[in-house]
Length: 498
Image (cartoon, rainbow, N blue to C red; front, side, top):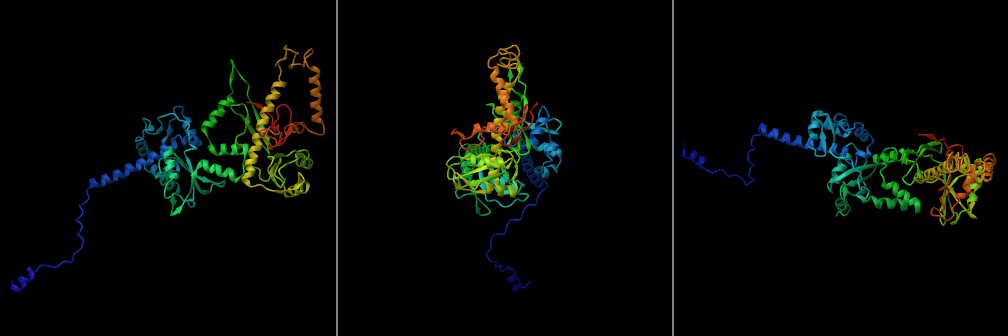
């Protein structure tokens, strides 16, 4: 080799300064791949387990009719894993098979899997959640619904604390209203979310957030509700809508009746005929009648609103013209003294011609020119529920009075004081003549120009009591036990033994 060549060889090579080259990656082994896959599978199993735990949680199980039916179908509360795995949000997990899902559920301390690996159940008894309303928040400002939005929402709120449920609010057509109610598991998480600084955002836009209680107050104020109407609205909003296993069990106990000595009182089913529908009347713990809100039909256009009465109303100015217009059917009037407006409920949906006729018939109230209009759908729905509840209370009260005074064998029953049929009806009993006069009077009322229901209604006009201005709060409802009675909201339906 020449010297020149040697010099060329020995001359050092100049290299530009750069970041150190990364060390060559070690070749992946099959063990590393298996470990990575195992970790992914473990996380995937945990997600599947958490999803099933949600289905069985106190915050969901007693409020999901299908799950509750599944839970109570078996006396030991075992539920088929295959059924649970078929739910929409379990599809990605059920694709791996029932055995895989069963293996995932064995990680849970809240759930247990049976020996066959085909059934699952809770390890504890179902408890009614306490303080759920107070632990809930309202948030608005989310985009329109897409398939993964529910999962994204749950992940978003879990950043602030553990959640029991994230409920996407929907309208009557099931369309997402771009807002949610979220129930956190503890008050600390609620405080953390509501006091977050900066405020929570979604896709860069600040959300409207508040406690669920504050949301209820806002809605009550927006609707101008006061007094009992505001109380009823708050109670309705604080309760779970739809199915509630605890409420259903309570009602079942009430409907079975209480034992008196060794005998059980005979229970009768009483129905309210309201706006063309027959609704079962239930009894609460205090013995008052009520109907389930979901059973009350919504009849759009059966309510009119008046404005401009000047803070007072003469009931006859509204009632009498409408009775004449609708062949004696009296309206249900809601008005609070001092207010400038009120609502009038009719026994059916009004036609445009009938609405025009009402406007022409009643142009002034309390010497003030009034404006008639249709209420909003929300106002009308709330009003119709109030009408039905008032009618149910009166119905049960009237039935109780009828049962006590008309039954055979009470004080003065057969062999008792006053002879057969009750106090004073038999020969020698006290007040026999008075009873006969009352019966003749009742008969005359039934056959006369005015119906029994109309005469009774006069006694329940507002008198300055706690429900001032709510026309018919204790008015006789639409019911029938032994004879048909017409009242505010139509004829009664016959009672029948349960």
